[in-house]
Length: 172
Image 1: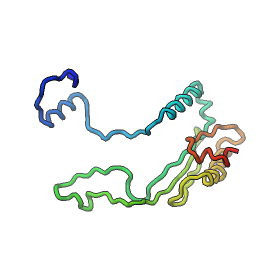
Image 2: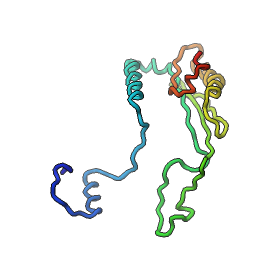
Image 3: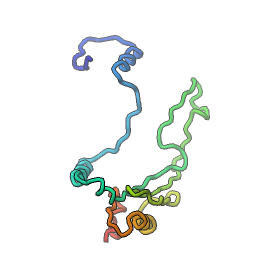
Image 4: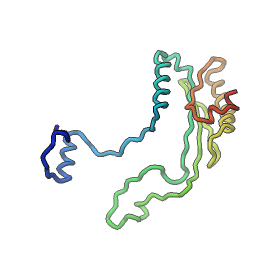
């Protein structure tokens, strides 16, 4: 395959020809994958975590309970929508994606372990997670799940380190 550095001559080719050559080389057009932007500190923290637990066995991981939250829009999509349309149909009802300036959202929080899933907590509409809600969820959702799944056996609670998870009121 010829690289850009090796090409010195001016070559004339149609977009279709270029597309066919790219397909022959196994390249296809796709949307770029999304991934979190990691800072240097995030990368270091992840490496430390991996090195700390690399020798853990399956039996060790059975004792871990993971917890996380997610936000969902109640109206409209948060991504792109692909449509097939004819010229002049740009604003046809079937070819548009309706939007609102401030969509209603719900936050949900759940937990899981090798021993099963815990209950799912749904916060009221347009409510954001803060230390008070987090403490409420720990008491009302997480602790009963730990009791149900682990009984008196010790377990490790793994969260994502969001600021409300580390509030001084909670960590005392």
